[in-house]
Image 1 (cartoon, rainbow over the protein chains, first blue to last red):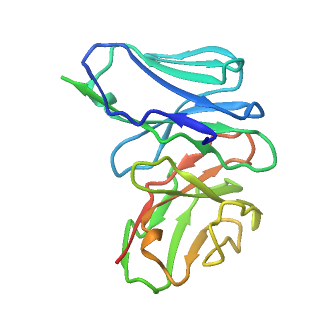
Image 2 (image 1 turned 135 degrees about the horizontal axis):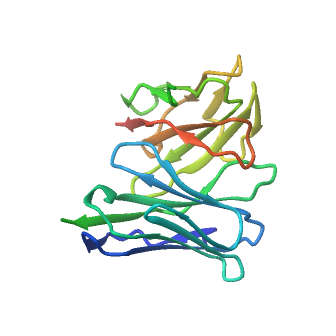
Length: 112
Length: 114
């Protein structure tokens, strides 16, 4: 079992819909949770960063962490065609090894 | 200010050849990371530098891979005797000081081994 599981999609939704993206993880030592957005042939760009269970909101984006279930989510409200990209969840143990552990990424398509 | 830059953006080489990939981190960032992203996969951690020293190289797949950061700024990832399986996008990221800080990624170098 991989440390971080993420459905690769593709996930296709109409413009304006609410999008839900999810990851599960196996290691309870993970403490810091991130969502990155990656456009085609570009590097990942940080969208959200959180370190506690609960919700964190930033504009149209809400990150949700449930440490008891080892489940993290990203919600996108009022989705736009410009949101079409690959969304990567990333997790950091916060310990000595500082590399992030990424999911496979979910390819999201917002249809105009 | 300028972000993380990587050169070249694309590199095509033949099996068995040696390649060097360069990363220029954000000015003032002491932490630097290399990742490898294969098609359809998330980035996979390779190595982490804190200043000039490799603090964690546990992700390097084998001894054909080596990275340096001699002056604590620019880093070079070196791959010897390249194999077709090395074909991937190699991403570099930097952060202000390391653990728990936001990592900022460069655009990557797309390596193709023929």
